Length: 231
Image (cartoon, rainbow, N blue to C red; front, side, top):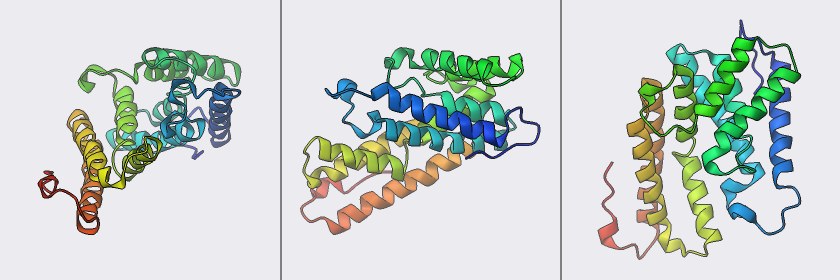
């Protein structure tokens, strides 16, 4: 993950240290919990899933940033910290809480330029914005696009099928659950603005559609009325 970028104020070793810090921070956020607070038993509310999600977003958002000419180091570092407080703060304040954690880390662990720290923290704090992406900075847009795209495709499908097990659903409900991934994926595809993000979204949606079609072919008893999934 720690790929050094020419001109970046963050070395590969420093980036790896950031990842280690975030990993440990997430684990500490749920350490000692025994009651499954905040639906912790769902796969996407575990420290393991959240860290994997963060690494996925680093990859996707960094790829988008490089393609559209955004500040790649800012986007990648913001991606590392964007959900660092997800497991300890409420959804509506986790972005601001994450920005505070990022600022504390970046101002105490190394001598990064103030402008870099300010930009990274601004992107982290803005990443949960739900309005038009034309209203935010290019770097924030890259992070938001990477964030929503991680929930689309094979990854989103697997998470939805895991949810079936936690909710004791029958495997006959799998097509319905996969349809939810398609529906949300289409919403995300409509929201992103960059060409590269749209391309990633549509590629991932095709994979979900194929999986849905395989279910129709291989699982007996699916209602015929459910066999018309538009794409």
